[in-house]
Image (cartoon, rainbow, N blue to C red; front, side, top):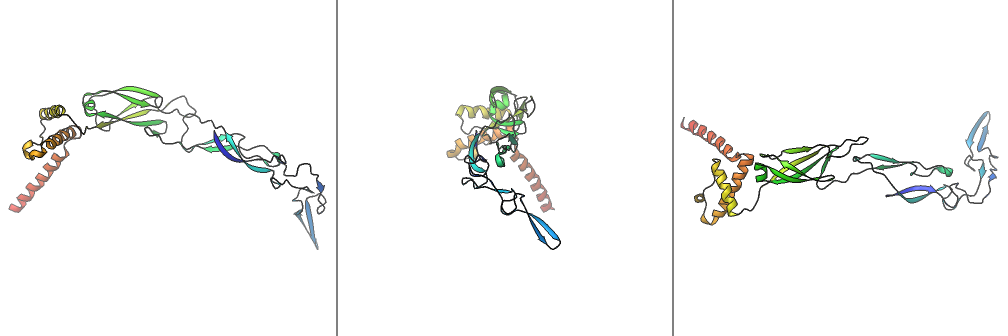
Length: 269
């Protein structure tokens, strides 16, 4: 339900604009024609009577509506929102607008829809998008995860080797299309979360994984003794980052090294 300010018929005069029980009298100026005639020589001009406003009669006006026959009113209106309506769409509610003059019927009410944003879902037409966090091990080895839907929850399979930015399409899980029985799609975007705190056993396993993959990690001798734990943790995260996103630092160092060799050759020349 929504509250709407609209014009309604005056209760005191029932929309006529005249005082209830009053009597109409013929306008003395225009003699009931509603038109005044002005003559000047051979010219004749017809003009709406200024005394009766062209009605041809006079009658005391209603004191509540000042002769308008309409007053401002606040009403509760029930608006049916169709499934799948989009932001900015105007809905017509019949016979819920302003009342007509002289007791005439009501017009239509037009309601402009504003769709509130959802904290989890992002809408794109009839399709919806949702981000689902998964762990590094789930991304590498695969697994299952529960995904929120517009109508409930569904468990989906995570393919092994899932990369950052990968998504899965769930058909007929989106929003119902207007004037249709079909539904849009739901896109599940996988967000790989790298842990910030690890146990010593988890660190050991990941360092073994990095060693097995032939990745070069920072050795403990490269850092002061007081920072041995931080060095190991950095190595762990560097290994996870390199495994998922590729080692950008090594590529940059190789390019820098090549540039340095060229410079040395020019200097020696």
